[in-house]
Image (cartoon, rainbow, N blue to C red; front, side, top):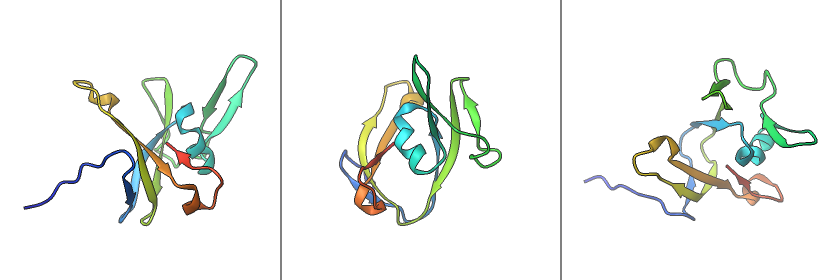
Length: 116
């Protein structure tokens, strides 16, 4: 019988195959976007926001979702280490279900963790 693993917050995982996912161009993904050089922070006297500068996203992967947040696809290679930082599930609203990950700073030679 196959076993199913439901991770908990704090679980550490290592990718064994490439993983492609969507990065939404919004402030919670700022550190990841800047780390991957796919997102830049902009600001004016009223607010700060993030955006994907064209043509950073590969053709066909840069789109708008619900006319609010741009999306860019990214692929992490096998061997990437991640920590599950947040699990969010809403009953009867699967479009809001999400996982938040951390890339530990020591695995990428940085002084701060990357959270997305």
